[in-house]
Image 1 (cartoon, rainbow, N blue to C red):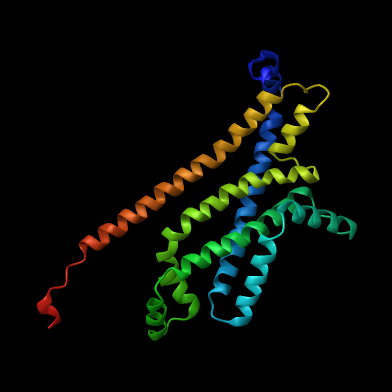
Image 2: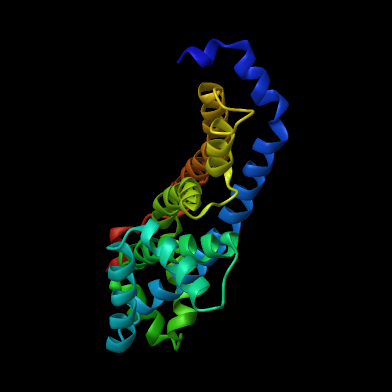
Length: 242
């Protein structure tokens, strides 16, 4: 803790600020592509799990259960080292994007599945009676209604995904945590543990906090819009039903 008030330690961090910025940008790059991959996988397997097709539901279930019940660190190590020993090595960043994206894709899938299943079954039946295909039903009717249900846990997964980029440290990545660890153990930069890890934490906060606030604002706006829509609908009088 003494290093937190050490001017020398803070000057070391300031001198190597470009190193922390590099780690920050690498974390952002990894997180961005991993989020895109996880969203694609989440939507795909979420739709499969609610398709009503036994084979598709079984495949989605196997994917979700296997990924959720094995550690992310193990998945990262397996992909990186298995590919390396097979002669088809992947870069650390590519390994991280794929591993983290696949891992959180399983959780995204469950979020989307829960959101879809929260919509009354009658709406599926009504859409089917009007000639809508399954995909058209999802696109035009079900998914727009389930956004306010899906959004909060989905953003939580995005925030967790960003923080899980720190797992790339295990394979020697150049993400923010790996850069910070290299900094505090370096021959010329060691001893500035407090300021280095504090700066790293602030950088993660800068990424994650605005996302949480944006999602909260979006969710509240959707709920307000829904309430206004209900208020504008005319009440049905008893004589109209007779």
